[in-house]
Image (cartoon, rainbow, N blue to C red; front, side, top):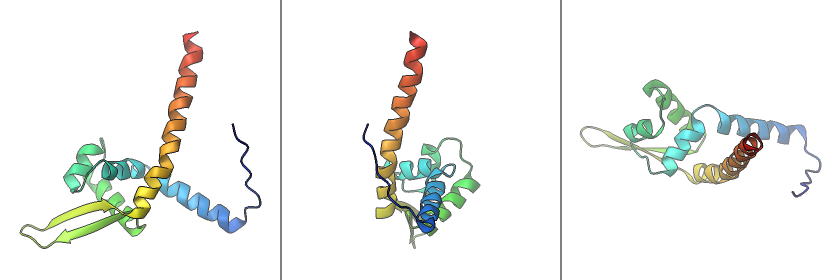
Length: 118
C-alpha cells in the first residue's frame, strides 16, 4: 500500500472536502448519477434504474444535482413537453472518482467473507 502524503490542509480545504463528500454520499445521489451513466435520460428511466426511490424524492434529488452542476436538464417544447436529464462533465468526473470507492468496497467485502470461510 502506498503512503499518501497530504501535507498541510487548511480549514477551507477541509470544508470543501466535507461538502463534496456529503454531496456524493447523500442518499440516492450516487445511484441517480450511476443511472445517468448507464443511459437514463427520462424521469421514468431514472425511476426504473434507482430501485426504491419515490417520485417526489427523485424529483428533489434531480433538482439538487442540477443545481450542483452534476446533471443538466433540457426541456423540449413538444406536446406534451419532454424533459431529459444528462450527466454534465462534472457528473461524469464524480462517477469516475467514485469508481475506486466501489472497487475498495468490493475488496473489503471479499476480505470479510474470506476469514469466515476458513
